[in-house]
Length: 228
Image 1 (cartoon, rainbow, N blue to C red):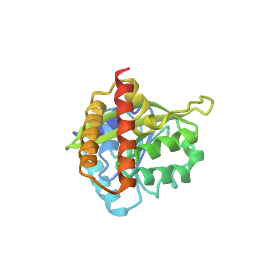
Image 2 (image 1 turned 180 degrees about the vertical axis):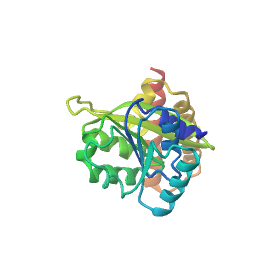
Image 3 (image 1 turned 30 degrees about the horizontal axis):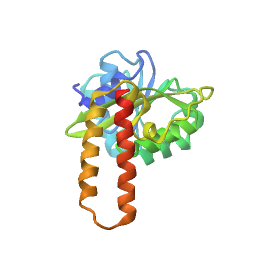
Image 4 (image 1 turned 60 degrees about the vertical axis):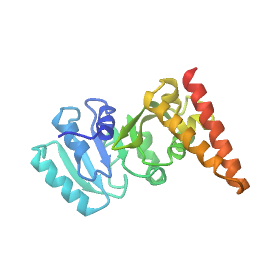
C-alpha cells in the first residue's frame, strides 16, 4: 500500500504499538498501511457513510489485514468506546468539521495518548480549539501533495502546561515556525506574494484593504519568527 505524501506523513506520526481509530477513513488507506507495516496491532476504520466504509472493507480484504483492521459506521467518535483507542486520526476534513467532531466527544479526546489531525482548511481555528481545550501540539509538519499545502499536527492533553500563542502561531503553527519547516517558508512566501498582488489591484473597498494589510503584517511576522 503506497500512500500519498500527506497520508504517509499522517501515518508516520502514529506511535508504534498504539491502537488507532481513523475517523473518516474513506478508502481505508491509513489503517491498511498501519496494519501492514506492523505499526499498530489493531486499527478501527470509521466513517459516517456506508459507501466509503464498504470500499474500505474491500480494500482491507484485498490487502489481507482483516485480522488487524475492523470497520465501524460512526458519526465522528460517537461509536468509539471509552479508552478503546490510544490514537485518533482525523484527516481529510475541513477545520470546522474537525473541531465539531472533537467538541462532541471531548471526554474521549482527553483520554487519548495522542490525537493526529490533518484539516484541509481553517488551521488557525483548529489550533485555537486545541489550545482552549488544554491540548498541546507536540509535533507538526507541512507538506505539498498534488500541488496543495497540507498541515499534519499531533496533540496530547496537557492542561497543566499553559501557553499564550500569538495570532501568527495560530495561523502558521508554532511548531512549524520553531522547526523552520522548509515547506512553511515556501507557503508564507507564496501567501505574501498573492496578498501583495491583490492589494495592489484594489483602489477602494476600505475594509478589504485593511484586512489584506493585516494579513500581510502577520505573514511578515511569520517570516521573521521563522528566521529567528
